[in-house]
Length: 181
Image 1: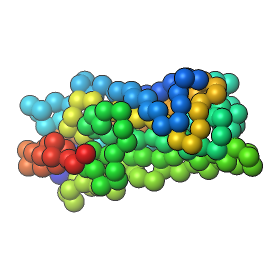
Image 2 (image 1 turned 90 degrees about the vertical axis):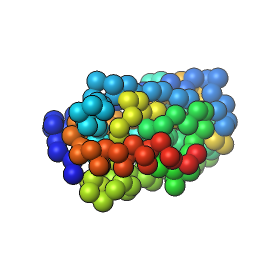
Image 3 (image 1 turned 30 degrees about the horizontal axis):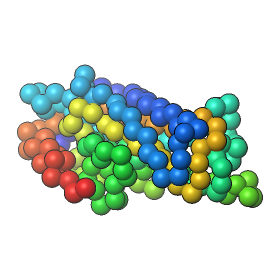
Image 4 (image 1 turned 90 degrees about the horizontal axis):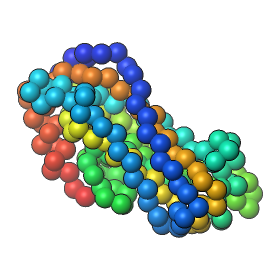
């Protein structure tokens, strides 16, 4: 069972997609958790929620101006390094994912998170996604068009520091390192 050591707080990471980001390209950023995760004391991060925010260089909400054609801007947050690619939804390292779909011709956009942090995890600690690794990876990319204006993808992560029992810590560590790619 997880015991909270802190209240909820936020971590953020922003990826920049420049005009050289083309159809199929991926951009990766990292979030250092070294100050929060401690193997010796069983300290981990419990991720309660993740929001993805997409903005163009003007920090406006009309992302249709930032792409060359109807496109999908996708985002994933993982606790293992996926390299420069997205992972499948059954990958145990996937913390959260979402997408912004842009219908440029009709100037219509829809945004949804399709995986939430509390969807996976051992039953005793399933109130959040428990992270025992010292880095999170944010991956963003475009499919269907090119970026025509510098754009930003920000992950806003609500989390807390928790202390895990040795059995829960070991179960999460085994699950995390044995994850399929």
